[in-house]
Length: 460
Image (cartoon, rainbow, N blue to C red):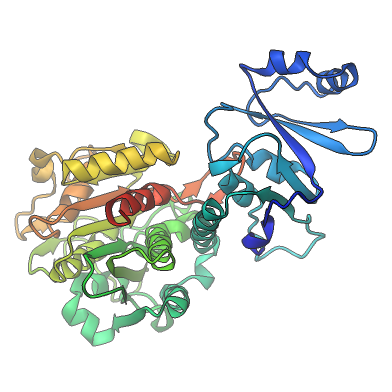
């Protein structure tokens, strides 16, 4: 669906009124309604609660009442239920600007139908808005979120390293960005851990490091890194069937990183962007890397493999090292890295690890400002002993079943250049339950928070 077609400038054209009501103001509002309207509301059980929707029939036209959490501070998902449930047509929010709720209107109409037999599609629900500047940015956010959802939802059979590279190239072309790929023997020499993780895959799914460069050389340089494990069997430390079921989403970090890169490029943020996506499939074959192997990293540190299912940190480590060689003033990485982060914080709340307090504060404030919450976790240095090795510089997995998200982040930190501000998002990239505007499946979690922070830092 063309998202831009779901918004139109409000020029007073005919549209169905959408009346927003919140719980605290419901009784006063209800008293002002004529008796037939009160009867219709009562028949539908409408009490102004968030996401409640009631259809109000009139003599010549109809309208809809929608419950919102707070009429004085509309959030991004306030209109999502209406966008999902209302019939095809044109709508106008009565009496106020929809503001950030436009995002939910757009994303409430998201459907992933790539593999379903075509059925009669519900027609578009078009919203009238009188804020073109907000509309333009919200469209970009919705398009970036849709991209993340689509990439994560696509099964691994159709979203391998090559397809991920194609998606990056497609995003780069209209922005005149330059894409380069390192693979084969050169990858084995320059990024040996990326190569080792992905070498067991079939030749058409060979590992690679995909890089995108964009922007004016005079602008501040930033690096964005995304974990691109297109499918994770666990390697020789194979996952159970239940653990593999959602592993098509293990490239969710790459999807987030690409979504953020698109926001940067299409908004022409004054930065010099370096995007790095290590794309692999963690498979099993005769040449798979093994528990007990010692890998040499791009940085030169040796890593003993305690668990082949702790592969994401290996490919990120080589990528973070290369990112640091460009002397960026900021590095952000996204990864579906640990189940421990989900145990600690659940599916909706990405774990954030940051080595710079001012950067952490900016990201947390941004997440709150745009209703994209994140939670800071500690880089607790004393836990480094948990992934020590007797025969290598470090191990890739903790020898204790505790603090898994923390030890994974501490591992990554060893590959971040000293003095470089760095933020690591350990995100789920998936929604297991349905909420208005947020269907089950791939999801962008932490993307809008990171974008809001970057805008505040660089857009002035």
